[in-house]
Image: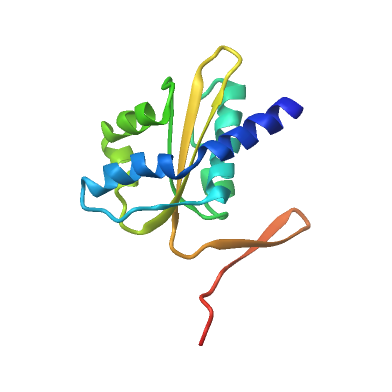
Length: 153
């Protein structure tokens, strides 16, 4: 557990403005607005990357039921790249993944990776919309969510 926690913290610390520059440079080269890093999306991405690494399987399992309701509007997954630049390049060569990275309706993203026991690195990029989702309560196995509304003047 301690090793997982330190990997998670390291992953969050790596999600810096330098990462935003790689994705945002790609978006800028296609006339798209820059995205902000969202650490909630980064945490969701890390949890999925770690799950894929544990299972040794690349998939979108749980996106609709788990990560979507918590603010993810789109998701890219991959494996094999040693760094973020490679993952973004890999996604840019796939029409569906490229479309996700260039969506006009997203404003935030989280990017994370995890390494399997065999040494294979799994990557997840979660892309989110303009209105952040706030987790408000958990009761009887259900998560109750509400969107944060801008302050009224």
